Amino acid sequence: MAGIYLHIPFCKKRCIYCDFYSTTCIAQQMDYVEALIREIKMRKNYLSSNGSIPVIDTIYLGGGTPSTLSHEHLEKIFDTIFSTYQVSKKAEITMEANPDDLTGKDALCISDLPINRISLGVQTFNDKQLKLLNRRHSGCQAIKAIEKCKADGIENISIDLIYGLPEQTLSDWEEEIKTAISLDIQHLSAYALIYEEGTPLWNMRREQLVKEVEDDVSLSMFNTLIDRLSLSGFEHYEISNFARQGYRSRHNSSYWRGIPYLGCGASAHSYDGNNRHWNVADLNVYLQEVNRCTPPLDETNATWMETEVLSVHEKYNDCIITSLRTSDGLDLSRIQSAFGQQFTDYCLRMAQKHIQNGLLEHIKKDEQSPLGLLKLTRQGIFVSDGVMSDLLSIED
Image 1 (cartoon, rainbow, N blue to C red):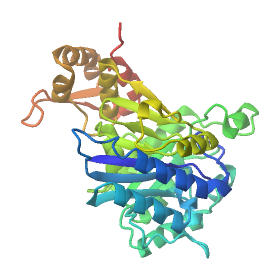
Image 2: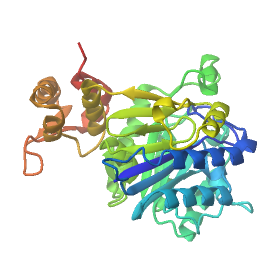
Image 3: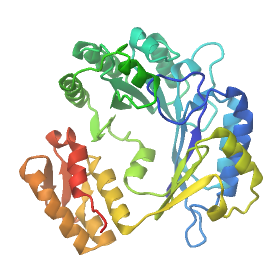
């Protein structure tokens, strides 16, 4: 099994906190879709192993804002994928969307597209905060968009929320959680607001136009989130992600399990099981260079793409970081099988102080995991970066 990620960089306007690659040059969408289709076809063999191309189990359209594309553009993209690859009949096919693109008289029609999962960029239901963030929708539109998705037959709806917004109180956040739960969604991703350098939000804080919430308030918000969602039947299966039973994000889970995926589009990343590749984060360069290439593509000479050949230490470190983020934890038998006894011994040795301090737990062996699992405890989740860092291997 493998996955496909497509980066759609277009936004009608930029949010003040976002540092993902995006552009407001909506007029270039048609040219971009044609180049994207070209890349999808040219890189057909990227995921092949021993001459065979794996079945595609997940497809994810991220951005940017994929819902700014027209129905016709989306149809072309999906037609290309389904005619180029063998897509599982049970594939999870996700599209990120903004609420206002799915409501109103010019709403994007998704009912006859193969999309079966929507990831809705709500961020907050508070109109004042939405205006501050430069979002295009209102809280009411977010609720209507969820209702519209349900009416269109989408039974797997995820929403994104941000906590720790300027002037947001714990009471405000509790209302956000209450509203989200009341909408009977299947998945929720929640992220603490980050002031990324170079963003308008960063500059606003520097100019004292906004004030960052205190760390203890942000911590209380995260604790409240975990408690309230747990009581409502959500599984906290990854640091920032919560799902009802059977509704984990299969695409994102494949990242954390090290499953290969093809990433197409400007700034998209790919992983073939051994090395990482990423495309140039520049729309015009991407369009120019993709259109200059002719199939079959020699990826070593693809001018719009860079490659990182991963060492055994880097692969081990990736495994530590991705596995410990999840509630499934780090399978020590997987470490032993993939990296050998030396790395396994090192991992266990470095984990001991965190086990003793109650930040990690070592769940003893069973038939599926003879060496047991390492998992972050509730306390460990809040200092996960430090715990993971201690387990990483530094090359000599």
